Amino acid sequence: MKSKSFAGMRCSIAGALEAIGDRWAILVLRDLALGLSRYDELQASSGIPNTTLSTRLKHLEAHGLVEKRPYQDNPPRHAYALTEKGRDLWKVTTALREWGDRWDATGYGAPTVEVVDRDTGRDLTLALVDPQTGRAVPRERIQYRPGPGADDLVKALLDKLNPGAAA
Image 1 (cartoon, one colour):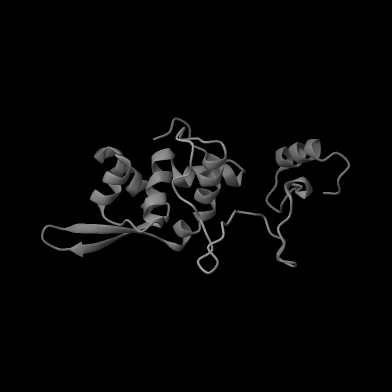
Image 2 (cartoon, rainbow, N blue to C red):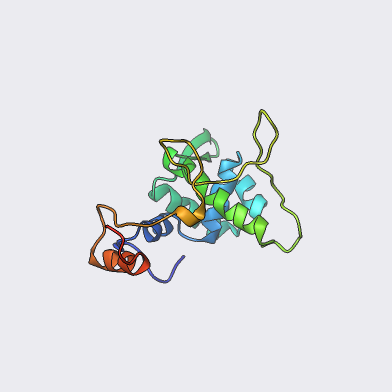
């Protein structure tokens, strides 16, 4: 699945990538979020090879992102569903979709999926929001600072990015 493990790295992005696994897994997560649940549906949606799909589902299940639920006894068949942890990745897939739309990552010139407000029909975009005001914060105002789990390497990196900023 991957050549180097990110396990043990002091980085939330590395940890998230370790839990997700690879690009096939992102597509499986996408399809589960869109409502697909059966193995054959997941395979048909992306054309993922059977062995790859089986491996990815086991990996996602082992990391608590997906759960397997029996729906048939003879022969035994299972459906797959996102756990709460898996559903919470919607922001990741939304960010990837928005980036792909903006930069025409498919090369087809137009988005294949639009995200709109159910009540107004207006387009929606992902944003970082100030939880006290409820307002989106522009990219120019975003600053990174060491969190409680930061080690000396992270502190040094962020100090380089933000010279003179109070940590």
